[in-house]
Structure formats: C-alpha cells, structure tokens
Length: 413
Image (cartoon, rainbow, N blue to C red; front, side):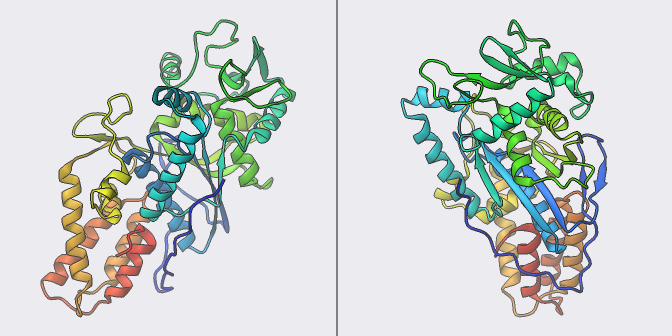
C-alpha cells in the first residue's frame, strides 16, 4: 500500500550532544534507555479506516513521530512499519450502516488519513501495509503457529492458544477477570462454545455469507485482528537473529495494550522463540470537554475538520504536544486557543532580527525529549526563550532554533 510523502528534517548541529532516548516501557512499568544502535525496528499499529483521523489517532502517531525523529537525529536508521486494518468487522458494520461498499469506505478514509499525516508533518512509515495485501503473510504465520501445535479449530474458524506462551498476561498486567472483561469489550469472544480457553484469539475467520473472503490453505475466510500485525511486523521489520528481541519498539494507544498487543506478542514469541519487543510504548487517550471521546458517543474531533475550519495543522500539533503523551488528556477549546496564542508569539519572536540566546533553549528541548518525550518541559523552554526575546535579550539565532523545533518537535514555522 502507498504511504505518504516524506518530510524533510533539518540536520542537527554537531555541537549538540544527544543523550540516549529513554521511554516508559509498559511491560516493566519503568523508564528504560534504548541501547545505542545503528538500526531500530519500530512497529506502530495503524487505524481501521473509518472515522479517520480523530485527535486520538493524531496524538498517537505524533508520539511515535517524535521517537522516529529523535532516533534519526542521532544518526541511526529507523525501520518504521505501520499496518492499516482494511478488513475488519467494524469497517463492514459501518459500511452496511451507511449503505456503501466497504472497499470504497476504506479507500476514502485511507486517503483522508494520508492527507492528515502530511498536514501534521508525520514522517511516513517505510512500509505501510494493509491487512488485505498481507493475507499471504497471515496464512504463513498461521502455518508456523500450527506447526508449533498452538492452533485449533472451532467449527471452521481457527484459534490461537494464548497460554502456549508462558509469558501471556505479563505485558498488560491485568487479572484474569479484567482480561476477560476487556477482551469482550474489544472484539473478543470469551463466551464462544468450543474454545479451549476463554481468552484464545481468532486467527482465521471462515467465510460468512455476504462478507468478503479470500482463499487460504484453511478454506476461504479472512484474518483475525492480532495475527495481522504479528505477521506484518515480522515480515517487514526483518528481525535480526543476533538480537534478544524481535523488534525494538511496539507502539500504539493504551487501548491496544490488551488484548491486541498482549496477544500479538504471544504469537510472535511462539513464531520466533524470543520476546517480541524490547520496549512497549503506549499513548494516553484524548477526551473532549471532560468526556471520553469515542465513536459511540459521536463526539470525535477530526483533524481534517479542524483544518477545513482554518486551524493551522502546526497549531494542532503544538496543542497535542502540550500534554504528556502517556497520560489521558482532554481536548477543549481552551487548549486550542492556548496553542494558537503560543504559536503566534513564537512566530513573532522568530521573525525578529535580534533574538535571545538560543543554544540553551535547543539543549533543553533535546534533553526534554530524551527524557521520555517530555514535550511539556520542551515547550516551557520555548516559552521561556520567547519571554527573554520579548524582554530584549539578544545573541541568539532564530534560524537555528526554528530548525531545531522542526527537527525534534516536527513543528515547521
């Protein structure tokens, strides 16, 4: 599948040292420094293409864009892969509800998503892979799991035995009761008769009347959700046999911790014989005016609609950066207004012929991002520099600071 156009990143002056990047790891619950490497493998779960792109999506992909930018600034290569679940029950349900072809809905939303990512200056993945085009990879992955005796049939559907992985459940830290409840809420079927374990997950759904299907060694059908990402990640990230982990970073929103990332990691563990990711990174949810933002509530805020209303995409990016990535946060008109005001002051300060010293501000931006992507602290450093410039201090380079803000925060001014 076609990705979106690349984004130019200004080079970093060699006078600035870049500390190791530390990130909050969901598995350990602690901040971990990524080891110094020439190549990092990062997989970020993509959207199911309907209702794209809301601010929750934007906040997630912006977070991993910051990681991508920082690692690239160190001189490393980042092999970044992202999927798009272009066949799934919610997509079919939305298409049926709206009386349109499911493929037309998917294609239109994918194109909208690409446009939003370009507007937000998100670096494109090296490989952007749809579930439909990955069906041969999925069937190969199922064959591998079947050879490991971890697949069984319920009627004509195939399931993966999650407890064949001895580490199942350790990444998400939920109790059995919590896992069952969340599994039921997020696409699982714990009450289906014939399953060996209530948490076993579907890997191949046999063809249903009136639904799309594809041929496979197991009969016509379509992929389960979790196996889609497992298969794509292994095929396109090409794990190094010398590494202790299959990939370096597995990421997505916190709503994917369970069941999606837990079950995907178990599948990879069986297929490769090693832990899936060295670091699991998850972003918080974005609410609206004190309420959860969700499709069911009908209160989603979309990037494209904000842009169509005249909001600068860089202001949207700045607004989303104003809160810690790992925490749930609220989107309000006040958040947007504050970002608009801040952007105006920054543009005005950078347009001056004489500006306050910039070296310390740039160093603080770098140090803040290295410390678990502390964008709040980075923005405070920029605010302080604006105040110094407005007070008449001189001796800095507006061009150098502008380039650094673009490089590390992705805000082009």
